[in-house]
Amino acid sequence: GAVVSQHPSWVICKSGTSVKIECRSLDFQATTMFWYRQFPKQSLMLMATSNEGSKATYEQGVEKDKFLINHASLTLSTLTVTSAHPEDSSFYICSAPILGLYEQYFGPGTRLTVT
Amino acid sequence: DQQVKQNSPSLSVQEGRISILNCDYTNSMFDYFLWYKKYPAEGPTFLISISSIKDKNEDGRFTVFLNKSAKHLSLHIVPSQPGDSAVYFCAASRGQAGNMLTFGGGTRLMVKP
Image (cartoon, rainbow over all chains, first blue to last red; front, side, top):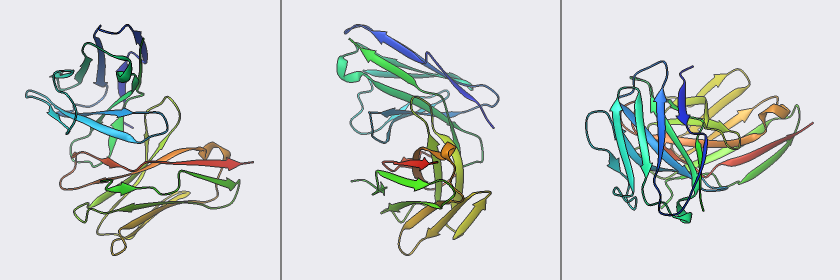
């Protein structure tokens, strides 16, 4: 099946710093990628839709100035958590659909811990 | 308002028996449904899906049933294996392929040997 990678798999950072998470589709092109966030024992909450060549679309309640998304190419989207706070600690997962298919392929996730 | 709900947070089943995971949705605009399996600290893995024009889709040990009138779908795993132990999420999509997915809260399945 299609492969989506994320980097890093885990990161610890101090409050006030910024962290960049990369999401890559390894064997297919993705004009759209999705960023999710999962809190412990909870569901995946869609944060934003990343669009290649245009601005990301953010879900209600997600601060676009805090969670910067850049879809730099057809295989790469990045999520930057700016001025991170402990409450930003979470599991961040990206996904990408293959053109014409409903199924989305998910990356392995990134565990962010803000101290 | 949760549009996709999985009312059972956990389910325990004996190896070899059938596992039935349920999912309800409220948005009648959803027209495609998917089941994902997730292990801790990993991304979800696609299992099986069903279009709203069908009421059943089968793939090996996994079968998904859709009852549109009841806005209910279920995933049947038979026979259940210990390796099936994971969190299962149902998800729904509307409109064209590639649109966002709305996820249920997940059900943790434990298959006991």
